[in-house]
Structure formats: C-alpha cells, structure tokens
Length: 285
Ligand code: SAM
Image (cartoon, rainbow, N blue to C red; front, side, top):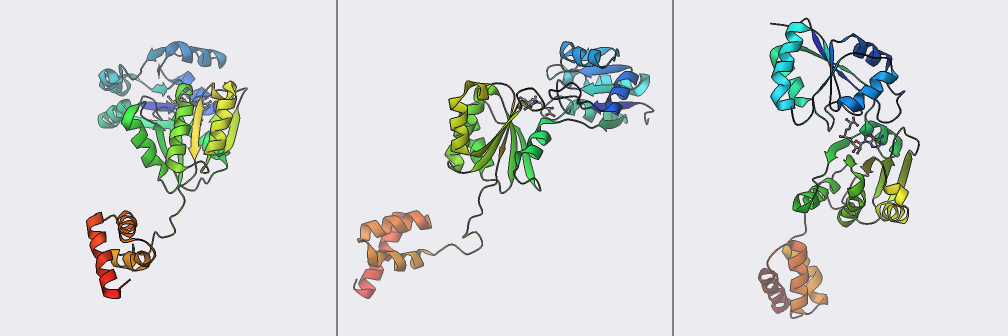
C-alpha cells in the first residue's frame, strides 16, 4: 500500500538558532508529531520558532525497537518529522533504521535540507572540496582507533571527521604520527556560534595551538585533513632485487648492502645477501 503520508527529515541548526529554513519551520508546524533525539533539547528550538507540535523521543537506544511501529503509524495516521539534536538527521545521528522501515512500508520519505557541521566545516576549511570522505567519529580507543587514523591518513582526497573535545588533542597527535607534522589540516570549532574558530595549518602547528590555549580545546569540533601527497613513484614499476643490488652493492659492505636491499625490496635478507655475493664474485668487487 503506497502512503499518502510522509516522513520528513528536517535539518535543524548546529548552533545559531536562526539557521533554520522557512520550509523546515512550516513542515515542523504542520506534521502531527515530531520525533526528536532529546525532546527537552528540541523543545527550546521549537519554542523559539513558535512551533507547538507534539514531540516524541526517538534516539539510538529505542530506534530499533520503534522504527516499524512508527512507520506504520505514519502510513495509517499522518505526516511526521524526524529531527536530531543538531544538523541533519542520520548524519552521525539516529534515523537510518526509521528511514529503512518507512521505505519498506511504502511511506514517502522527504528531506528538508539545512545545516550540517561537516559541510559547514568543509566549505570554510580552504582545503579542496571537489572530492572528500566523511568518516564520522573515529573509534574511541585502542588499536581500532590507531588503525582507523592510519587508514584515513592515506586517503588521496580531503577527509572530514567529527571529534569530541576530550579526544581532539589525541586525534591531532594520531594524525601527526600517521601523516607527519606538515600535512595541512583545519580544526573547525563551534561553527555558527559565538566562538566560531578555524585553525588552519600543518598538524604540528595545530597541535601547538591546541596545547597552548585551553579555550581551543572547548566546544564542538570538526577536523578536516588535506589529502595524502601523491607518491612520485606511484605509476612506475617497483625496482627489482637485481637492480637494487647492482646499484647498492658496489658502495657498501656485503652485510649492509643486503640489509638495505632487503628493506627496499621487501625480501628476506638471506635472499638479498646471496645476490650481493653473486654480484661480487661475478664482478670481483
Ligand atoms: N547530525 C549532525 C550534523 O549534521 O552535523 C552531527 C551530529 S554528531 C552527533 C555531533 C558532532 O557534530 C559534534 O560532536 C561535533 O563533532 C559536530 N558538530 C556539531 N555541531 C557543531 C558545531 N557547531 N561546530 C563544530 N562541530 C559541530
């Protein structure tokens, strides 16, 4: 059964209360019910814009259990809107399961676009915007976290990620470990709010700014990282063990030459050593 009714996905401000579209206000006034992550938080926004539509809680802890029932409710009873605490629903926020349930049930789903911290940060960053990866939040700790930074730092285009205030210093340290101190990055803090700040520069420079000023470690953050530099040998074939041995063996003692070749060619040192000795006996080095 195709629905007459619609679930609207309505973007709300990421800081400045006036950053809400005219259509968003209209839709929020007209729907029967608004599903919100934190009803008390959203009540303030709705009050500021004279919206008195009933609010119900839909958050990460009850979404899976409620998604199908809500989809049925919209199908049978009337339009609803989904909002999150800030920005665009479903972007590092709940809603994916509800939208899935609505799609399966034949309920029309319609976005009312507006603010999102990731696009605000990217657009103001000064880094290339033609291609980017949005990666959400990094894992909170351990090997999962360091592996994640390792992977992200190899991207050949801009990376946009969210980070919490108590992990922002660690995130920049992790990136510096993976990318070196010079890689360009931007920390976008408190976007659209009173203390909105963009810190732009090399990772080491950004780290010093964070460590040197406690205010720069407060608030909400988006981290934008410049692309990994293109490797200059990327398109040519890797050098063979024989080529490396001929280039290196004449200039170093055999053991040392074998270590360098093994390291560069990623072969066992034994194999490199045998080739070094073979070359010496051939050419009488
Ligand atoms: N759905 C939201 C969106 O569209 O941007 C994101 C929700 S996510 C749970 C919240 C994270 O977004 C924050 O921890 C922070 O990293 C980032 N964020 C939200 N508002 C921000 C702001 N005003 N300035 C900087 N970052 C912000």
